[in-house]
Image (cartoon, rainbow, N blue to C red):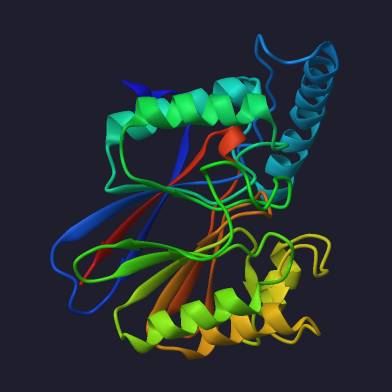
Length: 277
């Protein structure tokens, strides 16, 4: 079975929201960094993708070793093959929604759009995707300006683009309006958040200890600060699901409000989230 493939390693999380009926399964995958070309790509595009895949072979091993995460021969495969494995797993597990938390592609290009289109059509289930810092903020049908909302009976998932270390004012305003409706919200974004409750944990665990790795609640950037403060302080927002730092971490933005940071999908990381009442 695919889920027994030694390429994969799993984390499991439960998000409890009072009033939610039954249990809902979410598959969370991030930072697949797919480098690819196809028959329509130029020789230059192919050479660049091959070169970058070799770069990631070295760097994904370094990230895994730094974070004490699994890495060996099963994970030492091209990024395209890793993404194909992730999508085959998603098809097998058939979650209620697949969340792709950014840096899905190494670069946004026509070959990437063709590849994502094919693989998501083969998956056939519901999905939400946000761009990462390696991707264009507007890219075909996969993402664009404005918040994205997926409705469940007792909660909703709201996708926000924070890939440029800020959030557009109109997106913060739209999120605030959704909060006013009092339906519980899970946030999907790319860049994690640092708040007073988890600042030291962020600095300790997210190597580099600088604002490349997270949005800070005390940043001078108005949009980023407003987004983090809203996620911290509005009780309608129940959890944040993200990626970006290439290591798995779970911490609380404020007591009782988890932030689940997925590790490298290109190195087999899979996060299975259960939402229940």
